[in-house]
Length: 152
Length: 363
Image (cartoon, rainbow over all chains, first blue to last red; front, side, top):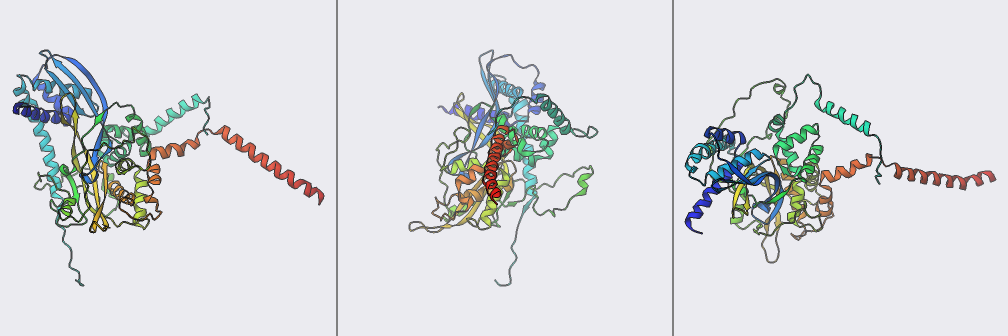
């Protein structure tokens, strides 16, 4: 694997992960602002399924099956043949389709525009939500102190 | 034995129509939306996801609405739904040390690196009914502090550095999956944890409590309890690498328990582990206690004959859907069974009478 594909994969990993977790309404709203989306052909129509989520004993040990979660996946090809995959949490076929489209567009000349108008603002919104929660958690951080007992 | 019966279609249809009406309740009261249940009854939603063994808050909220708030019925609906889903695969094990913690406490170290973070807890509330909630009102935004951005290390890591706690060595062994193969005994720890993670909260709580009261006491400290979101990663064959496919909220509890030592090993703390979908604190602590009790053989402890040490007993009775299915089926028509019992009792009585009558005649 060349360095370039490594970076390519890492970048794709990042935007696909972002799309998987993104709130559907925000993703659709940002795409609507872009305007007409390119035509595509289905390679795999959106399908809803489950994946078994695993944990590790003690957080570090042997894996075990914790329980399932719902995901929706699909694959499509733009007219120039670029293939996009959508893997998103939940049961929205519409969101999976949009995620696959963005994944495909991010591999074309439109990448810069899509990154600036969809990926970056989505990432920012999600980061803000995460930081807000972390800030609320931080406000509940305590410093316990033990009372000195007479007999000690 | 249940024997199929025919008839009653009209009555069943009408019963279901009435059920729908009762579910809705008085129509001059606004109807609950799925979003309201998801956002405002989130701990009920979490329980349905944990015991339904499917992380999907909207589905769990729908199930609660459909079940009129009967959580075991809602769990039943989720379990039935999940069997219809094609299985796309298994995820990589979640990295709980990377959790974005809403809450993280330790009962063993007051100065735990990373701090004690209470999160949105019921602890330290006075458990007095708050009549303000009966009236509508805006909630003021909660205060904010300086957000922590680095991952919060596990407490067990610090004990491990000192080598005074039992290690949990990593492996990549594929664990048994009770949704694919029926449970067999001995189950092994991974399968036990899967079973406990989806087990009934009340049952697991009762079992855990029994260990605290002396039935296989193992003196647990909550080494760490954390609640928050973790990313879920899965290998995608068509990509050739793993991506995040979402995130789940989890509660993780690690207990630190009394020592084990042997001729070759110095005494060290042992561990129990609980991991549950959603904010499910009581369940995760209970799970960790029961996990620890079930490890008696592996840790060279005595079998005290306590229920919580009996893997077959615990795992066979932890599932509330199996339990309620078998329990509730006895209300269905058993006319043929009962008819045969009725015949039997009548015959026994006739025989008994036949034995006593000649004596009476002789007197």
